[in-house]
Image (cartoon, rainbow, N blue to C red):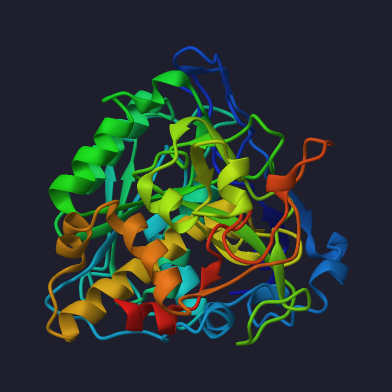
Length: 430
């Protein structure tokens, strides 16, 4: 591959969608506060040549990925993640739901994998499958989810190269079509996690059977874990996203890695990402797994009985700690909480595989039998072991007001949740 193919870098924020139009790496659709989300979205990807890149933000990162970005090895080391795991009869699968995008993701995935010396997905190793509910419909101008698809698929594979990946492309980026794609994703064999790097501003009907009811019933029936990005506009008091706000979904917030290496995050190594989504839900009541964990804390009082967002966090800063993505002939540097959801999906497949190798019941069975599902488990994990690195520095206050919930602090906070994963310890807990 020649250097011309490396000449474009971009970053993309987390995906957002509306029930009417839009999609891709874009702004957040506005809710009407009385029913469905409404309004369009537009892309937020920005491409610059390497000659115009400002490397000052990543100079201290020492990333070993393309052009100084974070590599799979960097993130596995930083989060104490086993390099890989052997394929097993469990065949754990990550399902990814996205809206339509151009390009050939199967080819892009293998170009990415070849660069990072990861297993290729082909007829001899059928680790990738695409289900296109759009039937190849033309991509609307300004609504191409190509880079987001590359981010989700490539980095799920990077962090769990032995897992299977199923990409479900929705008919469109409307909320109805995305929810239909979620159901299709959950119905695929071997799925342990469904990753959703998108969201809409909260709306009152999200608590109904059409939305929360879907996640609740699928989790109860199949034990599948649903992961959603918490958003990339910080906390202004009224901009939380759905489905991250759902108590039946694990919300993934954002952090900024300052230096690569395995060490407890601190102000010198990892802090909260200023634009990571978080805060108190507008419509969702705080679930029991959160209220029990937060009993007696100021955070419980500040959330005023509402669901606290996010549950966990992951590297997301597109400037200081981006990852490389290959899409449609170009390399991009990408960030946003979009990056965290599929990589947490990869962690879930490691947990699933580890349980099978240890002769335990399946992860799906454990999730089904636990009050609160996977969220109920991870709040216990925080209590019982050092399964997370606590992020205690940083703020996501984008509302230009006093905001006690916007500051990272010791223990759970509405900026990075329980923290970022210490995967080795998390595996031991499960």
